Length: 106
Image: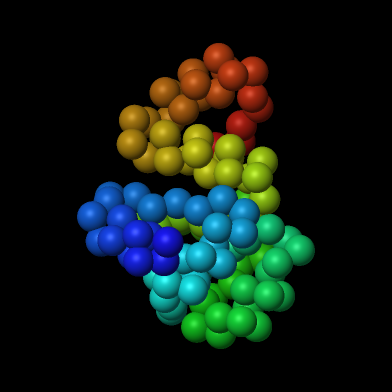
């Protein structure tokens, strides 16, 4: 699976992880020398097991351009709206959230 993740990272415009998916990205070395976040219960694990990752606490997601990580599962929703906003604009992100009956703060 790690080889597959690395291959995907080499050919996609955006790679995003939700919750503990950041551990897989860290294991691949993708997060080395980058800012990242993860579920609050795993922040210390990410920091201790992968010292080259710059762990950011108390945020819903971290955007590093082509690489994004989010905290817990619901934080992945916030990150998804952020990605929609980047790709299609803030208005489309707001319209999408409205159709889902989801309150976003962008």
